[in-house]
Length: 325
Length: 265
Ligand SMILES: Nc1ncnc2c1ncn2[C@@H]1O[C@H](COP(=O)(O)OP(=O)(O)O)[C@@H](O)[C@H]1O
Ligand SMILES: [Mg+2]
Image (tube, helix red, strand yellow):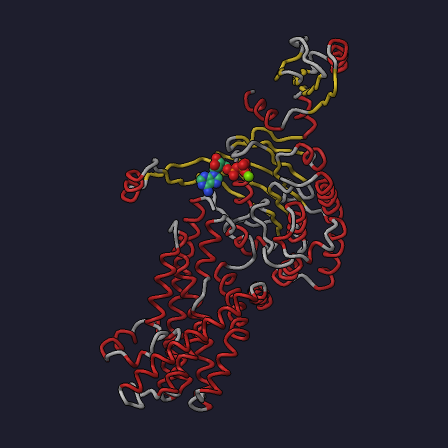
């Protein structure tokens, strides 16, 4: 079977107009506007098979949203080609988007602000010509999965960010799209809602074979949802492969320790001090050189500890390291 | 196909339901502006001691203003500002990700709003016209022809507004254009006074411009100001302008989209 998405060497630049500060500069810019090109994508290729949940990760400004917009057909690339569900997204936009679902992030909700979300749902039913029976079934099922049965009857402006995101997810899936793009679906969403959203995406993916492309900052999204990830940095795909492989390359763990009183300067083999100030101690442990139990033991026997948390390094730091390699 | 279009129309009407207060406010403002016209023209008619001004009796003229109020319901569209707002807050990509042309998205939504406004906001004013100023169609034929003409006028005026609104793809601030668009064309449309009041020279110029077909033509057809042949010719001109503006939109759209894409959405 042909892949759902096959994208080759996408490049995209934006024209931005600049001017210096002040009135004189403002006048100058009336006469001759200087523009500068920002290269957001510098040649991204991608292949996605049916039924995958692909995670797109990367720091702010990496080009994730730009990639999503091009793949949805709403922006043209400067060069490169794409075949998605048999269409060229930006040339066959209107026919193509009938087959996809999108959430462009929390700021770009498709819900009508002044109306209850159900009104938008019914609008989508008509717009995508979803049969009434199927529509009713899907809406009831999704509302239950995401726990929004009552919410969707309140004006959207009265919903919290997380509640709105859940309604947006439903809106993007009512017409049974084969392919769904989610740009940062969990930003600002509380933990419980986040879990619901993860579960929802999993269920739809399993039951309907829907392909998902999800961009995120959140490591938990990736761990819960994706087997395969693509890391984007500065407009390039710098890693494409299983999550497990990526993680095995990074053996660092972070320890954050709260002490009951100020302790002596910390130093231990395989550890790097990130911060030591009063009763706060933050260190990074390279687990290739040192095992975490030994570090804990060292700390507990040398300091008076109030609290210890162990975390994976932030996704941004992981990516920075990939990029440096 | 039709179902899709209707979905936008319905959404447009629902949009307005959320603004009940504003609708009633607009009805009040309409009554106010009508009463200003009433006193102004009352004074003119009585001081100049005539019963006819350019062929209009006083109550015919009031009927005319009531119909411009009706036309205002579709003419005073804020569709172009909405396009500009959608561009500015980056939400146009949401519209573009829907399976419809942007023209259809905006025009159909606007028609839904307009039908709602016509039903709720304008109806009381029309009833007032019928009761107080003996507002009637010239004949049954002129009623039928004016319904056709008004329907085309609604579509024409919306495509025109969409076309002008496309300029917001190039402009960082659109509101000046919008203001000029509504204020200037409202006069040229016959919204401020019947175009028959103008000297012949100006009337000749206006006849080659599209504006009178937005408002003046259907109103005059309704009032029976033209023979049926002339009315049909004018409807033909309205259709011609509809085709021209549709063609202009089709021509401008790829450029607008290219501009949008280069700027990054
Ligand atoms: N409309 C725009 N005009 C100019 N530059 C833009 C525009 N949109 C995005 N960019 C730039 O393109 C790059 C990629 O942005 P984006 O795709 O939004 O990144 P991400 O979603 O990964 O945070 C950034 O450097 C950003 O500043
Ligand atoms: Mg982004």
